[in-house]
Image (tube, rainbow over all chains, first blue to last red; front, side, top):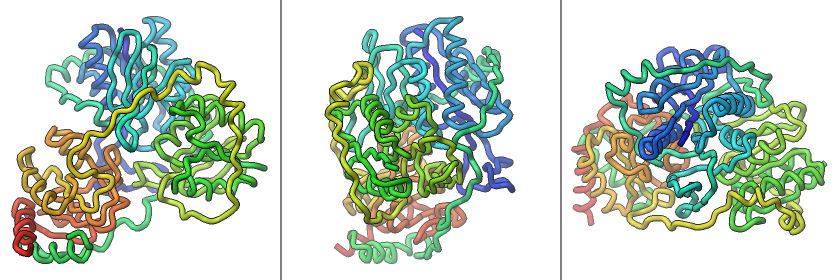
Length: 254
Length: 290
C-alpha cells in the first residue's frame, strides 16, 4: 500500500498576530513553526495505515527552504520519506499549489506506483482556501471526500465519516482516493527521540517548481478591528465569586 | 448580466446573496438539495452547466463546509480560481475582495483575476440586505443527464450525533478549561460548575492535544465555533487558534492567574487568580444562593 500526506508550514501565532512592515505577511521573527493542525492528523493516519498494512509513505510540502523542518516532523512520526517543492517564500495561491503538487505526485507515482490514498487537511490554518486537496483529486481523476473525522479501509474501498451539523455523513469510495481530514480524526502521537533521530537520515527529494502569477493575489493583511475588548475586572481570587454570580444572573443564565 | 448562487436557504446563504447582487442582475439560484442525498461533484457539474448557459458573471455560495466544498469542486472542474470566506467584494477586472484568514484572526485584501469570479461568503460577517429574490433554476434536466462519475462521491448513510451532555454549538453557557487546569482530573471542578449552570464543557487545543478531553470538546479554529451568552474561560491563555472559535460569544469571562494572558486582555470580564480556587468558590456561591 502507498499513502501520502500533504502538509503546509505555518507559524505558531500565539496570542497576538504582528504583521511585517509592508503588511503582506505575518512577522514571524519571534515565532515557531508547525504544520497545520488538520494535516497533523492526516500524517498520523498515513503512518497508522502503513503500520497496519505495510508499504510506503511519503510526505509532500510546498514551501520555503525551512519547510524541510515540517517534513522532518512528519518523518519523525513515521513517514518514510519527503518531497519538498521548494519556493522562494512568496505566497502561492491554492490553484498554483495544487498544480505543482499534481506534477510532483505524478512524477513519484511514475517511479514508485500509485498512491492508494493522498491525505490533505480540510483547509490550511493560515490562508484557509478550502481547495487544494479537491483540485489535486480532480486533476488526478480520483474520488475526493472532505472534512473527515473517521477513515476505515474496506478492501479496495474506503469508508469515510464526514462531520456535518447533526452527526456525520458516511461515504464509501473506491481507492485510489484523495481524503481531506479534520483535527479530531485521531490523536497524533508525540514524536519519540529515536523517531526524531531516524527522521534526520530519511530521504527528502527537492524540486523547484516555477511560481505562476497568482489568480487569487494577496494585496495586504490587516488585524481586524474590535480585538482587545475593554475587560472589567470582577476582582481576584475566591473573593470574586459573588461578582461572577451576579454577572451570570444579569446575563439571564442563572 | 446574471449571477448564479448556490443556496440552502439559510442566513449564511442570504448573506452570500447580498454580495452576489453586486455582481449582476438577476440572480439565479441552484439549491443545495438539488441532488439528494448530497453528491458534491454532481452539484458542481450542475453549477458549471447552468453558469455556462446563463453566461453568469459570477458564482456565489455561503462559506459553510458544504458551500466551500462544492465551490472548490466547481473551481477545479472549470479551471478557475476560488476566493473562499470573503466578507466584502467589489466587481471589476480584477475583482477586489476582503477575505478571512486564520479562522477570522486576520483579514486579507486580495485581487481575484478571473473571467468568472467564484466566491464564498464567510457566515455571520455580512448584514443581509433586502432585494429582488433569486430566480430558481429548473435543474431537472441537468440532474437527469448527470455523469455517473459525478455520483461516485455520495453520502450513503448517516451516523447520529453521540448523545451526552450539552452541545457546544447550542449551549447558552460554556465553562471551558485550558492548560491551566493541569490534568484530566483537574476538569472535575469545571464539570461541577458546568453541571450546576446547565452549561457545556469546552476546552482549548492544548487540552485535547494532551489527551485530557476528547476533540469534540475543543473550542477554536480547528474545533467548534461557539456562540453562548456567557463563555467562562478557565486557565486558557487565548491563542488566536482559540479566539477564532469565540467570535460569536456574547460575554467572555476569563479566569487566569496571569493578568497579561491574551484572553484576559480580550475578555469582557476578568477574575485574576488560580482557577482551582476561583471555580470552586463560584460553585459554592451558586449553591449558597439556591
